[in-house]
Image (tube, rainbow, N blue to C red; front, side):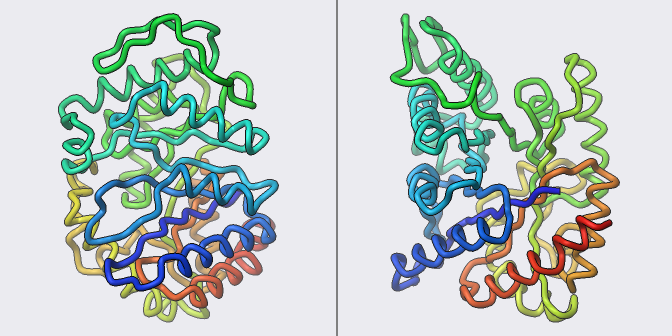
Length: 338
C-alpha cells in the first residue's frame, strides 16, 4: 500500500494570515516525505467563497522545491474549463522541472460559477473534457498536431517541451457518476475514487469500472487510488470529536457548492447529520481501527494507494500533525504487516 496526502489548503474568509498558513502547508509537505509517503495531492477550485484556497499549479510548483521523491498529483484539474495547449504545456514543464514526478489528475467539475467564469456551460463539460484530453495526449506524444475542437484550433502545433516521462505522466481521472467511471476506464490510466461515496456505492461502481475495462480491452490498472477523510487518535470517539467541527464546516460548504449533484443516485446527499455523513465514508479511530479499515479497502476493492484528507477547514496545524505522525508511526506498519 502506498500513501498520499491531499492538501486542500482551504481557509475561512476571515483567516488573517494566509502566508503563515502556507508555511504550515510546506511543513506538511516536508514531513510526509520524511514519513515515507509517496504522493502529494492538491485540488482545483475557482471563486471558492466562502472559502479561500491556494491555486493548484503554483502550489505544486512551490511544493516541488521542498521535496525530492514525492510524486506531485493534480487532484484534479477541472479539464473542461481549460484549453488543452495551456494544460499540456504547464504539465510538461512541471514534469521536466520535477524530474518526472508529475501525475495528471483530471475531471469534469460541477460548479456553475466556475463554468460561467470561464465562458462555458455544464452542458458542454463532457465533450470538452474528451476532446481536451485527446488533444493533450497528442501534444505530449506527437511532433506536430493538427486538431480542431469546439473551443480550440491546433494547426501544426508543437509543444515548447515534452514531458520528462515517456510517453507522458500517468493519468488519473476523478469520477463520481457511473458514466464518468466508464469514461475513466476508457480514457485514463486509472480511476481516482473520491472521498464522498459509501463503501457499497464504491463496490457497485467498481463493477461498472471493471466491466468498462473489459469492454475497452484494457487490463485492471496497476494502481488504484482511493481518497478518504482520515483522522487518528487514541480512540474513535476522540478522533471524531477533534475532526468534527472542521469537517462538518467543509462538507456544509460542499453541499452549498452543489457537490451532491455530481454524485451517483442513491448516494447523492451531503446534507446529513454528521454521524450519518461519516458512516462508511470517513476513517476515524485508533491506529488499530484505521489500519483495519484500510486493510479492508485493500482486500475488498484492490486499492493500492490511500489518499488522506486529514485537515478540515480551520484545523490547527498541531492537531493535524499529531494525527499524521500517529498514522505514519502506527497505522502504516500495521497495514504493511497484515
